[in-house]
Image (cartoon, rainbow, N blue to C red; front, side, top):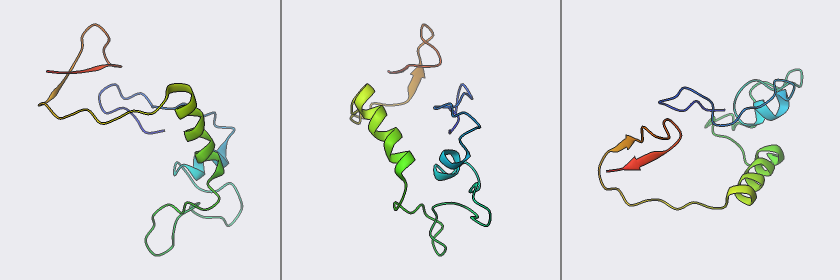
Length: 92
């Protein structure tokens, strides 16, 4: 849903026929009439983790497919690898 800062391509493509999923992930309004912005606390505007089954299912799928990742130690600025650009980042 969120665009990559360098390539401008989205990280996940979602069919527009899934407005409920898109809204649940914060990408639009609820498809339910009068629903407003979906899954947000009215006071803090932060996402509510109740009834977020579609987003949770996507997370479970991605972890199952690709596994967990850890944080790499910071060793300075990252540069794009010309060979695999823009998908892979190489620390220098």
